View 1 (cartoon, rainbow, N blue to C red):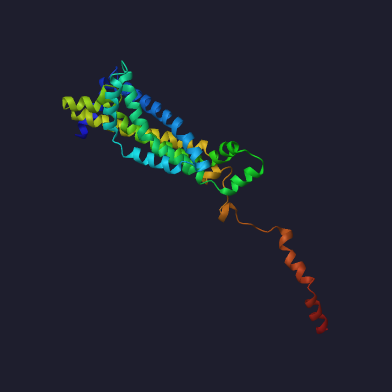
View 2: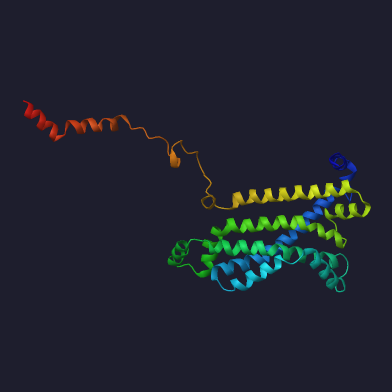
Length: 270
């Protein structure tokens, strides 16, 4: 089976044309990017406001938890039946697919946003308010930068879920890497199905790696514990071994010569 998968992937005919892997991968990434962008626009502001004010936390968190239990495939079918009679063309299938992916991705992004703001040190908030900052300024200039690690964590989790689940778009006739799964199942081409699943996994890993790189440069090193600047010495805490200078080494000898008790002992001896 592994040889069949390698043979399918190594065939140049499967990588070119409108049904090739390259074209399907771009479609898959486009669906995922649009869904993630819509999710971020909806969930991040709500999460930041909840974390800043503490209002509506119970209601929103419970709704987000309930959204986790909704099966994406069942929701896609219901939305397709609803929008199919109201929209025309590809929009009748694209809109339901994007909504299903957004519903799937909102809970981790929302949780990361409000948890990041809630985890900010209260002393930082008090210091910002003491400087005369307004509530919105505290949120945007203090709480949001400090919450970025958890915000990116929620976005990374949502991106992985979207990339892995965007294959359902092929069930309603759209493109993407799910086409290899659906078409392979219909024709019982199991190497094609396995190769499509493998490509989806690789794309998900590459997307996660891209988010990790962006997070590394977008988040302040002080929040992640990374060292910056020149490499620290071998000593503990980044300090090297301290060697006294020639003048410092002479200090104990000079003090010993000036010790009054020593002078007294010398006088008693004489």
